[in-house]
Image (cartoon, rainbow, N blue to C red; front, side, top):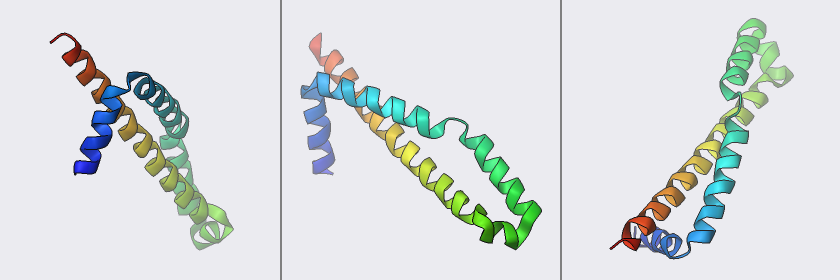
Length: 96
């Protein structure tokens, strides 16, 4: 817990780095999450239509890759929110 607080404090002190990370994580989240719902539904439809043959033919691998992409997108979103909070905290204390 102290380590996370240390990182947050560091991000609050380095607003340019925090802004750059915020921008990068926003782009990564957008890229990874773009059309992911459509891809999930197409993969599920393919697996349901083709059953075991669809899994062996690469449908299961694609499903696992989609799940991994969703996890990476969530990690990027969490980094985005962390940087956002750090920048807001810095702005809030700038007026004190």
